[in-house]
Image (cartoon, rainbow over all chains, first blue to last red):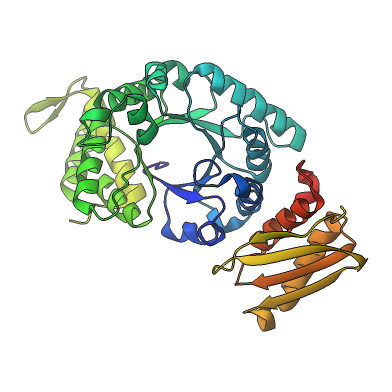
Length: 291
Length: 97
């Protein structure tokens, strides 16, 4: 089971971060060529990311590159560096429409053909950062078979909504809309970054909320948050024990040719069995939660 | 690629390197200062010479202050410095590999 709980931002112009971020073992790294890079360092960052992608340092970690939008002077060159460098996934910022995804897909395919990379091997991810993007979330999520996830980006979104970050009320509709779009399209969904690095309690409260809603994980800006996030997403011993009992009951019912699964005198539906299997897969991939 | 003006790339932070390239009429002159010169000096020089050869740089002065950068960082920073010095913005990705 491929886990996509943590996606760690790594500034593309920062050589030290690019050389060491793999040590923190996030599920994915996101080399950032957009907001984290000043205009005069765009060229150097692009080259740093291009060469870092070709190193074995990040084996086993999904390598995502956030490019500049394609309607800027930097977007196309960022894409060339990323696809030719071997990025697993391209993250498109400020995605408002499905047409932007289709434009990206066409450009990626052109580069794949030109550099001899297998067509279709570069995945896409759309970041939704505006009211338009939220309204179009389902169309965006279904815009290309290459899309493996959509991410909500909180800062630009709340600016567009003429509000500010607070207790999460301001993100409630956007989170639900993006998540529903992702689930309907059968792709992953990522929540916003939590920027107050000193507020561990607040971070864990937000993680509990987005996990409960159903997000696969979060974008992160600090490696310290990775372990906290992974632990919060790990199943508890109690959950695993129950899941084992559910799966065992399902197997028993199947063996006996029974259409109805019973556990402790209660009937169990098929989706509960599916969820139990997911819990066991997660536990195998991530280990148990440390209390 | 011809170096037309002085250019800089990189930083003096740990795991990075700072590069200054300058045009010259004379053949290449490469000066490398590194905290790990005894262990990796030859390897760093080999990487620098390989990158310059790929980019077709045959004249100029290259001054490098290395702070323990990985090979991939050396390549990226040197390519950025050379392209800036040559006034080149179009990337030849095959030559940059």
